[in-house]
Image (cartoon, rainbow, N blue to C red; front, side):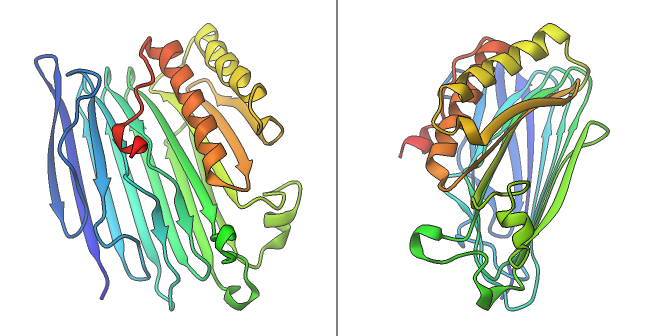
Length: 281
């Protein structure tokens, strides 16, 4: 049996409080609104009770942020794309952020199991004056358990991902279990099996000083971290700053990304990091 899930999230200001209305169909929903840092920021935890995404499953998320609202969306655990007998497993996100609104898209890691056939698409439409931070952490297989994504017995497995900031930055690629030139080459994953991307984006060009401040903050934290040789920060467009990291395990990557995200919050928004409570459970 395949799961079809759809979730719509609408955020808006009610006085000084960001409130949210959600509409769900199927096994995809959010927990109650949380306000650990006051009324201005609504923290939401996205849950999928079946626990993973299998072949034939389709999950769709739509988030709409009205002017002045600030939403932080995360997950209580990893998103898991399981082995498929042939059908594609799909998850998609479309987020529309109005001018003056802020979005933080901060799910925990995604695990692509050996033999999965999966597609994960994210599209962020930022109006002038909108801002966001987002990250994506992708782990291939379960190396600690001896379940390798590139196991020869599951060489037909593949994972396709797209991150789209229309007109600004587009990444789309497919990782195939039998593509060892990509997985093991020093020009690709270099033998690592976890890759992370963190970005800060705006709906209009950032000033050079602001962009430099974001770059300097990230680079200082990267230089002081154990993953400094496998991480870097660049600005491919004047509306986005991107951090990329490779590692063998998820935990050190999450620690580095959390540090950079906290630094960016301070530099860009003059806000404390305030990690979601679910990350500490």
